[in-house]
Length: 359
Image (cartoon, rainbow, N blue to C red):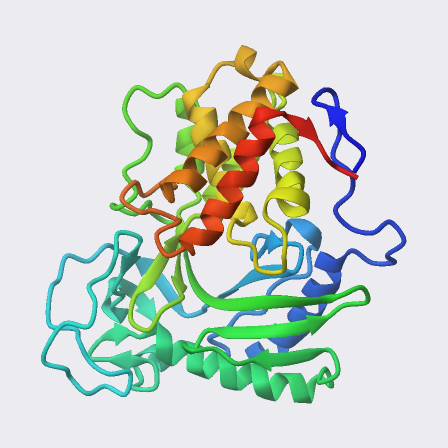
C-alpha cells in the first residue's frame, strides 16, 4: 500500500470509476419499483421516492449493506402515551403469563389510539393485538408483499428474499458491479413532536447552536418496526440536519469523517457485514463535535482526524458507544466483542504510527 503522511489528502471515490451508474442509485431504482408495486397492493405502505443518493429513506451502512425505511400511511396526529397494561403475548395474539422482554431505552410500544387519525386497516387483527400495533405482524405482511412484487415486477433475476431468524425483511440485490444486501424497515414518520426519551441537548453544551437545536428537533423522529413487539426510535431526519452545514465555519469535520469512513472500510473493519457501520462513525463524529465545539478545533485536518480515530478506538476498546440522542443506549451492546477487539487492535496500531493507507 502506498503510504502518505496525514495531510491535505482527499478521500478517493468509494465506487469504481468505470461504473455506468452509481450503485446506490441502481439499488434505489429497483427498490422504488418494488415499493411502488407494494403500495399498489396495500396502500398502508408508501413507495420510496427516486431522488438520488440523498434520499432520506435510504442509508448506506457499508458498501454492500443498505437500510431502507418504508413509510407507513394512515397514521397521523401522534401523541406520547403513559398507559401501562399487560402486553405480553405471542405474535399470534395469545397472552403469556410472564414478561417476554420490556422495551429497552430506544424502544417503545405503540398503540393505534396514540394517533388522532388512523385508517381502519390498522385496527384489524392482522396487525393489531388489543390495541397495540405489532411490528412482527406488519413485517410478515411486508415480506409477503415483497415476495409477490418481485415476481410481478419481473425482478426475480435481480432480487431475492433472504432467510432471517426473525421476520425482518432482507433482500439480496444484484447490481451491475456486485451483490448488496438491503434491509427494508416499515416506519412511522412523526414530524410533529420530539420524543420524551430523547433528552437532548444536554445542559451547557456549545455545539450545536440553540438555533440549530430547534431546527433539528423540528424534524421529529421515526418509529421503526425492527423487532417482534417494540418499535425502535430513529432520528434520520434530525441527524441529516445536524450534518448539513457542519463546516460553515470553515472547519474540516466532514473531510475527517469521510477519510475515517474510507479507512474503516479499506483497512480497519472490512467485509460485507462490518461490525462498525457508517452510522457508528457518524455517532462518533457527533460526540466529538460536541466535545470540541470551536471552529479553531477543526482548522487542522491531521488534528481533527486523529481526534476522531482516538474516539473510535476508545469506543471499540470499551465496547461502548452511547447513542447521540438517547443517552441510555449503547449502540455496541450486542456487537461481537472479539470482532470489536480486533478492530480496536488495528486502530491502536494505526495510532502508534498514523499514516493513511488509501490505495
